[in-house]
Structure formats: C-alpha cells, structure tokens
Amino acid sequence: MADDDIAELDLDRGARRGYPEAMYCEGKSVNQVAAIAERIARRPDVTTIFTRADEAKAAAVLAVLPDAFHDPVARALVWPPRMPAPSGESVLIACAGTSDLPVAREALVTARHLGRRAELVVDVGIAGLHRTLAKLDAFRAAGVIVVVAGMDGALPGLIAGLVSCPVIAVPTSVGYGAAFSGLAPLLTMLNACAPGVGVVNIDNGYGAGHLAAQIAAPRG
Image (cartoon, rainbow, N blue to C red; front, side, top):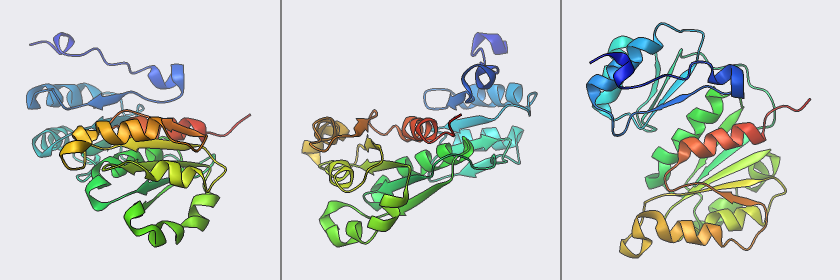
C-alpha cells in the first residue's frame, strides 16, 4: 500500500497556522503508524506530536524515530524530541485525580511542545477541598488553567471562581455508571456557574493543551 493511500501529511501547517500537525494514532494500525512515522522522519524541521499511541503503536514509532520523546502515561510521542524555548504566559494543568492523569499529561506534553511553560498539579479534586485550596497561589499565578476531571466534573467551576485567568475544562471518561463515560462531567462543565470556562471534548487532553498554548501565546 502506498503512503498516499493512508495519509496526506500537512507538513506546512506550522507555517500556515503557527502550530504543527498532530498524528492521532487511535484507529490506525501499527503498520499505518509506522509508515507515517517513516514519512515524518524525512522532515526533521517539522515537529509532530503522536497522540493516543498505545504500547504497540509507540513501539512502532520508536522503531523509526528512536530518539522521539515518549510519555507512556500520556500515550504521546513527539519528534524531534526538542522542546522550543518557552514563551508567553504560563499554563497550569490541574488533575482532579490519579485516574485522570493520562488526559492531564497529554495536555501537559502538548502545551510544552507548543512552546509554553507548563506545570502539572495532581490530586486536587473537590473530594479533598483542602488540597485544592493549598494550590491557590499556583492557580492565581497561571496565565491559563486546564482542569481535567471526571466523576461529577465540578472542579473547573470551583477553580474558575477563584482565579482571573481563562479556565479550559476537560471532562474525562472516569467515573461510575451514571457518569456515562464522561457525559455527566461534560454537562456539568458546560453548565458551570463561574464565567470564563471553556469546555473541550471528553478525554481531549491534546485539544485542551493546544488551546491553552494558543491563549497563552505571546502578543505583538
């Protein structure tokens, strides 16, 4: 099968939009991911983020691009592995619970490799409000906050009521039956009482990290 039969890479997206293309690996075969990695290897001047790469697909990428940055928790790889010098406002990713870490780390990897200074705070869900409030100084110092939460999804609204910067809410599919694989926290976040909350799709850490990087970009 020819490369053109499986993908047409948008290698000029960075020049056109200011940010490179990402390669979504879920739904692609291991062979397809490997073939795409081989084409990407020809353009070391273009940064590519591979998202949703399970163990087998990550191995396929690393077989072609052995020096690629790999975060197995985030299921993300980046090639070339260098991070750009950070600029603009800082991005803080708030992870409600340990089960939300894969999505939160996907947002972290994305924001960092798109040129922002990004940090992660973990286990600050509202079931332990004292842990959330203990990070208040860090929240208020951020230029943009990405809040990743499943279950009831109430954390973004709480944080947005305490800070002046934009909050990007990411519902995750973490939760018991009535969480409906992320639908319940999605609806909670869409109905947040605090202003200044934007919501991305369920489990979309990449989209949240990308939006945060755009919001936090240097101006002028």
